[in-house]
Length: 342
Image (tube, rainbow, N blue to C red; front, side, top):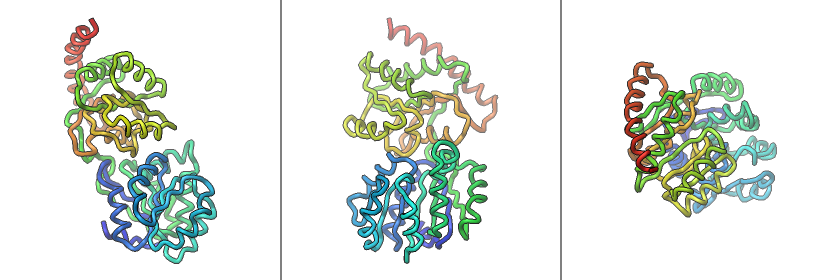
C-alpha cells in the first residue's frame, strides 16, 4: 500500500476492506514509510482514544481532544516534519481548516469509518458530513476507510465530492464482506425471540474459558441482562452509547468476562478479547449494520459462531433449512435448561 503515499492534493481515495483487515496498521505504515504527515479523524471518540494509545509513545504524535485545543498545539504541530494528529470532527474549527488550506506540504487526511460520516451525518450528527466536505475544500489528499459502504453510499460519495476535489479513486479489497467468517451460523426467525434467548442462556451456562458478545436492541436490555448474570454469579460487562470509555477502562481491569452485553456502540472499533460466539439480538434492516456486528468476531483469526435473526442474500429455503435445525436443537435446550433450574 506504499502507493497511497502518492495520493495527489485535491483527490479522494475511498479504501474499502473487510473488518479486521488491518486498516489501522496500514495507516501506521503509510505514516512511517512516507514523507507526509497524517491527520486521523474518527467519528468515534473511543476509537480515536485507542489510536492515540497505540501511537502516543512515538515522536510528533498529537491528540486533539477538545474544541479550542488547536491554538495550544498549532506551533508545535507546525514545527514537526511529519506530524500525526488524531482527533474527532467536533474538535475541529474554521481556524484549523484555514491552516490546512495554506500549508506548504499538506498532510494526508484519513476519514475513518467513512460510512458513518454519511449514516450519522445525515441524521443526528450533521457535523460529520460538514467536516468531510470542509476537508475536501482545503484541497488536502483524502483517504476514506470503511468496511461497509453500501452501493447507494458509494454513488452518493461520487456525486457529493466530484465537484469538491479533482480526482476520485475507489479501491475495493472486499467491501461488505467478512475477512474471518463465522465457522457456524445460526438463524432464527424474528417471530421466535424466546428460542433465541433460550439458546443464548444455554450457551452462557455451557461456556467455560471463553468470552461471548451479545448485541442488545435497547439500553435497558443491557441492564436487564447484566442483572440476570449478577444474580447467578456470572461475570459480565456492559456497554452503551456514551459509556464506551468507561467500558474500555473496565475491560482493562477485567480482560476476560464471560459475556459482554452491548448496544450498537460496540459494533465499531473498540478492541475486544477473542470471542467464541456473537449474538445479534435484534432484526437489522441494513446489511452494513449487521456486518459490523458480525465482524466483531474473528478479529484475531479465532473461530467463532454467529447467532442472528438476519441472513442476507440467501434464499428462504436456505433460511428454513437452518431454522429447522435450530428448532430441533431447541427441544434439547429446553430440557437442559429445565434440569439446570430445577
